Length: 83
Image 1 (cartoon, rainbow, N blue to C red):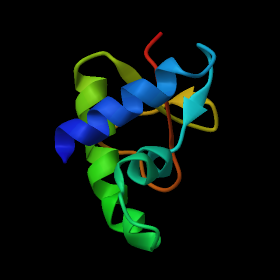
Image 2: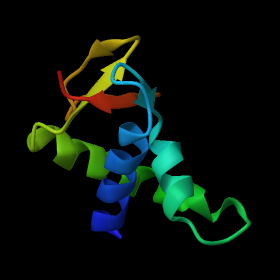
Image 3: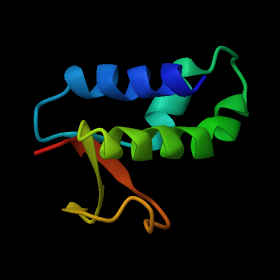
């Protein structure tokens, strides 16, 4: 599941304009196979996947449009391609 979430994040970003961002929920919904709200259980795994991609210099985690420390980010966040 971890690799699927990482791939979903990168795939979703590849389909957007370079400066665009996604929410971790976009990745969770992309890999969830059911019609229910089961994607919600994938939110923390999606955030962890984003942090791993930050460590690999693939993406940035932002809040209010500004990069934040992935390890300390709390609350709503966005994911965008690394600049």
